[in-house]
Length: 376
Image (cartoon, rainbow, N blue to C red):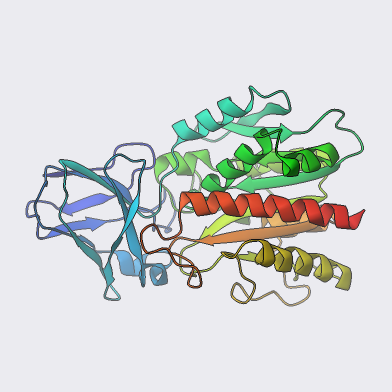
């Protein structure tokens, strides 16, 4: 019996693995950081055996409440991922499982590999209305990819920016982005036709490739939380943010969405930028329009639960949305999806899933188009 994690996105440390009934594990911290919560590993050689797996350091994870009522993901083929119950006693996360095959994968959420990311980009750029720009390199030397979608002349159009996976363990964000890209590639789709005839859509599908490959929860190669780097990013510590922020400065922004996942809250919700110093009644109207309309369009999304808004002038200006809203005077929002499931629309088999992430991306595009037309 063996547990391995030496693959793209893998993360686990084996403490004890000699007895199937007492497999002891710990999650490794992000490099140069105290953040950890993401895990992804393979259990081999335990077919038809009753296994009890325990993550001993769950209590000190970044968001231990994320393990309450949590159901782990498992897969034999890394394509179909199902949920399995866990127990969290306030200190240790544990679950019992009898593998049906010689090898089985467990993960905190459904992984999104760098190979899949490269396939996503490669497939998109064969379409004439999609262009690719290599913004630069990450600290580990990985490509920072920008995809731009537009029909015809790109001048005199609205400029939309959507970024995902600043926090690499929030893989549902790139599944969301995959759904977004699939929609925008379909030139026969009426929504795509509406959007791209009036908008240039800029997508950064993966803001943190180094953290993703390394199996980090929240930071890049040197332990920087990218969504706290937007006020003064540097090429030395956060080139991912520096490169994207500079590109937004060149193009401007009329709409900005940053896609994330939340470990603890079992809801889909949006966080706005209410705390910026020039927040106004008109900005509130715009934010309310987007959130309320999205709740009407997609039953998985709701507006009652989420992060409390900051008081006027108390915004955290190191974040992507506050910086973009302040610099470009546009609607800028953070979209959050659950690691667990939505309480109002639960799925016992899959929980929050790749397909629901993709469907939510379609709804977000729908409301984005309505919002931008509403401004005209």
